[in-house]
Length: 376
Image 1: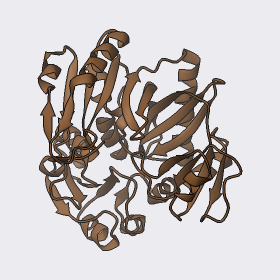
Image 2 (image 1 turned 180 degrees about the vertical axis):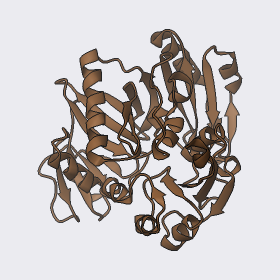
Image 3 (image 1 turned 180 degrees about the horizontal axis):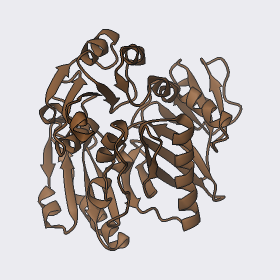
């Protein structure tokens, strides 16, 4: 079976940092990976065997890219699903299924699916256009389509905030009394095997609405951790999804877990798995989409992950300040994404700090966070 897999031609729609790390994991098995991305300087370009410049949202481009391939997968959900459906009809394997990508692309459909399948989530109201104002404030405004990395999400404090929102399909979500934000990575292969990763606790940069740093394992009680894993497993089974799924959760002040959003691909909240879990999320993705036995998700070491973001007010050729300190820190692992240009809050890389003590790992990480800068 493995020899057959090594002969497959495999394509990834998207060549950002997730594509790069998928290519690096695939290189361990010498897999034949092709990448489609509009940016000729994308992170994955030099790590794949074949690169095609073109947009993964364009029907003809995706169809042309897929003709010579056996298996297609994604590192971003905002791709042309019509082309993927037609490639499926030609006998190509596509994971995750295009129908699931369409469900997840539209946050309103995603939310309705939670309700229909009795998945706990925060209350919401869906609006196609700005026909009516919120019944009360504060509320969370989310664009139904196209939101990514904190974009397309806003806190509405009053009517003036609502009036500033674009006239696009959106949903209004009730404000959750959040205690912690949790994420669980879960994987499933074609034969129906499912594994979950230990829940992580996410701390967000409030200005950028992006993950700042995260703790693994999450500082939650064992009962809550078990429930979070069960929720993630339940969702991937109900979706019948093949591949990786990131499940982002709110833990509210009442101790309830509410599903916020899901992503059918490798995810920022799983980057620490490269060093601190027996099977990284990137290797697990290949195991899942190629229908190999899934890998062990045993925690090897507590860790803290820090996103390395471009400095506010800085746009231009990236310069990395004080990064020598990373190499003087025991347990620190640096990953840069190969992006030549920085801009405010752009994800330029990440840092994982592992230690026998989660408290010590956090102390080291926060000390580095104070001095590491990506400037111009």
